[in-house]
Length: 347
Image 1: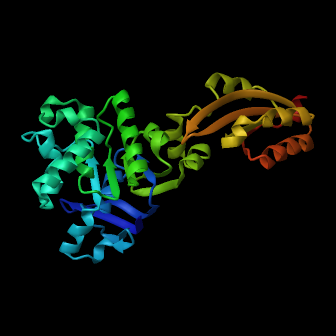
Image 2: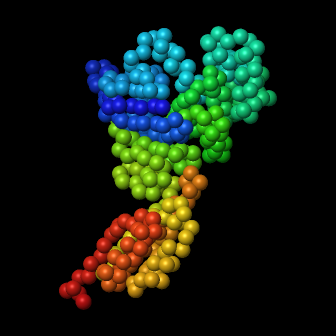
């Protein structure tokens, strides 16, 4: 549906070159809710503006629905853009026009007749829960209502792709939740592929099935949300995950552990079915080792349970290896996060 191949974007300002994107390779499949996350200045907004050619790549190719946007002439590009809706952080509504007229703008530009425009706008306002606000001005609406108008406007031309550039960052948590649920409903009921730019990992956790993490114009990690949340590789990704999932020991526990020797520390990741089965109990029951559970937590992601447990193991190494093999054979991710070895001189 959307593919970026080896994309670079360079801006020149006052004779200074700024490399906003550096070798981006990204693929969004039809039906995805794909999140792109990164700190301010990572290149997220530049990336999403390439998808509808509000920005053109300095180098590389952008494909939408199998077609290279760079090969289109102006008329063909305009036609392709009709298939891509976009909503913005600050709504971008025309304050001088009523809600009905704001939603109708894309249809007016497409030269639809008045009856068709009225029917489509009323349908969309009902869908986003604003049927009673058709005659209101944007200044009379709350932030969440304004964003719903923006969403209705973006859907007016029946796009197959919806781009969301920090669409919830100006909203309070409760309103953010309602907007995210609306986007999820749009994806499910209209079969629209959604691409979300955000700096909030909670947004990714709530509705995305895939995610790419950006830093300094590059994608440093990408994959399914379960994979990235369960096994974050890059430090930046780990920091984002920590904002929504506690998956590490507290400083006081870490300090007490460092005073002990000869014990191994393991982080276990339980995903889906393995999180609801007594695998850990079976491991303890069948192994001749001492097990100290230092930390445990569960999180719901995409209607799947992600569990994290940190264990301290003590005993014969062969028995420990046997226990770890048992866990792996039962679908549990195992990571040695720290190792403590006896200091024989102090025994």
